[in-house]
Length: 294
Image 1 (cartoon, rainbow, N blue to C red):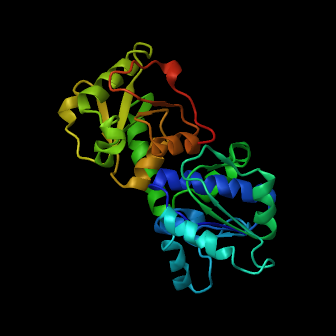
Image 2 (image 1 turned 90 degrees about the vertical axis):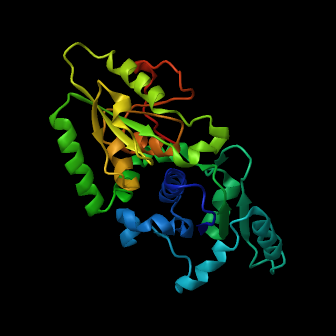
Image 3 (image 1 turned 60 degrees about the vertical axis):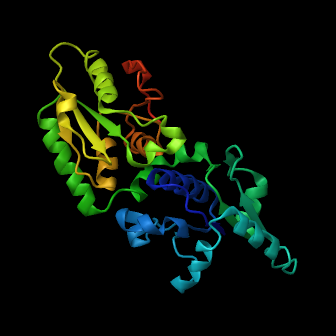
């Protein structure tokens, strides 16, 4: 059995982490529990219903939910290492477990034999962010998309919004304008002003054939002044973090700063994405590509 113990970042990070584990567990038929996803569980079909299509996957580890509190205590790497040391004191037959931390390392390949053996026969506590199975994530993408479809109320809100957008355009480009935590993340390197986004939007719009009706769906965690986007046809997302994510996944293109949020939209909707690594970065349609494996 594998237990994902650490809450890593926000929604995009946790969706990708969970998806890599689900794809790997589906391929190799081992039990998986992910209490770290509990905060987002009500928003997605599989996690809200605890129905993972017959796979031995769940959120709760113990029958008594209160016992899962132990996993809140090991969020910090130092406490997790204490737990590692404590389990080494167990009798050999009980300590047939692998505890894996990957805080600063490269991708940890979930296809490694030294991971799969205890995953199938013992216990793995996975603590970190860089666990990946890109091969099987691509292979099981239809399963992942089905399990992580938003629940009906959010699905319907997205469908209604997209119907309104599509009525007035031929091409819909989703623009992820991330502010909030990006004021300090990476020293504010990806905290762009409205003028930078508007310039890139106009640059992309100019690359479509004359007469093509191009519209932009703005998704942001901050109130925007639409006057800064004068001359562009705009639609505003609902502002709900799940609905905005899946609205981006329903666009024809997605543009935004580096973020796992927009990467999930690209993966889920098979939508070409271009990340802006600089505010003055020139953008062509050839720069957009679908992220298939996070």
